[in-house]
Length: 351
Image (cartoon, one colour):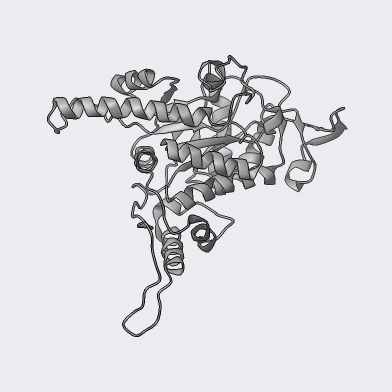
């Protein structure tokens, strides 16, 4: 469930296209040469500063960094852009947006036909029965990294076909009962399958496949476990902030206003890789395991501390809990909104 902040301004993100194919420096009437990269960076900086879409988002890089990584030609990622814009709009027009996990295109079509406005794509489902290794895995990020983007593409293809059928049967005119077939997809990036470069590339793949939003959890990727299992190992708070920024950078480079969802597993995790981050030390017990991990005190305080640290770098914030609990959800929401009143929240109701 995605829950919008009560005080955030409504409206979708700015959707102007900031790159239009190959661009060359051109001479002005007074003989001075224009530099497209500098002009693009200036426009991007202006958008970040003035658009309601980016009002609460912090970045650890500059517009010049983004443009430098784009190259002279920028592809248009229509499905991802339309999905991100629609999901953002829904989040600011409705009290909440609920979704169910879909692992096939036909499941997604049935969900949209039934009235759901967004699709969730779970790594748990992909591990179990939808990965490119054709294996049945536990929820431990064992499947090939491109498995989720491939399912995103398959779901979008099914939704596009449903849209094409409706278009042809109504001779191009939508009816009052026709669903909005291209429901935005929120996809599971697990713990990023590695470091910040892995997160950057995975986010690019998600966008190319047409995902509207992607969520990232703060577990150690090589030890990742389902949120309902024990033995989870956290990475330092600052390291996960780098992951969130890598995902945002990828979206900016591709020119898509993707929603970055930050998930913390600190409510139940019992281990952390390092004591390097001062923000984590209040929860470290001093004990270590044979593998070298540090033991931590989990619970609401740990989850809230992580949520507050991640809030400036994400669009939605999610604290994973072992079971659905309205009291815990309320406590988390109150603590986050006391400092970030516009912060949107997500909640997981897994069986």
